[in-house]
Amino acid sequence: MHSVTVRHNFETAHRLPHLPGKCESLHGHSWWAEITVTAPQLADGLVVEFGPFKQHIRRWIDEHLDHGVMLGPQDPLVPLLRAHTTKVHQVPGWPTVENVAALLADVAHLALLDLRRAPGAAVTRVHVQETHVNAATWHAPSTRTAA
Image 1 (tube, helix red, strand yellow):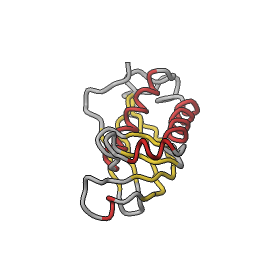
Image 2 (cartoon, one colour; image 1 turned 90 degrees about the vertical axis):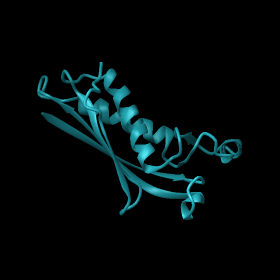
Image 3 (tube, helix red, strand yellow; image 1 turned 120 degrees about the vertical axis):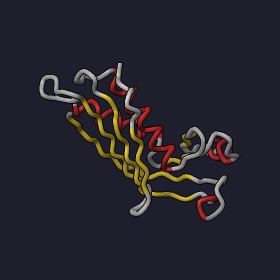
């Protein structure tokens, strides 16, 4: 097995009004994401072509998350903030660090579909850190592969 990992950081606010405590309030973090792609063997010496993969991941994060707000689909702040030209990304469920890791796994999986990669290359791990002490890791189900 061979793996490559892409890292990127972004500044984003979120809130978790469904959870009691200080995270009910709108607040921001300096997030770090690590996305790992694994293949059973290399093709032409690579797992996935690094440049285009990094560009896709970084562009998506910068366009959708960086210097914006992540909110749940039912959050009443969504229309208010959008009306004031704030970048808002609705995270399925709520923007917990666990759900953000799963969201980025989906983004990375879709990126692989259009990139040069080894046969069987798949997103196998996404690690998202929202603070220096809080992080979540998404691990791929054993059957997920890029088409």
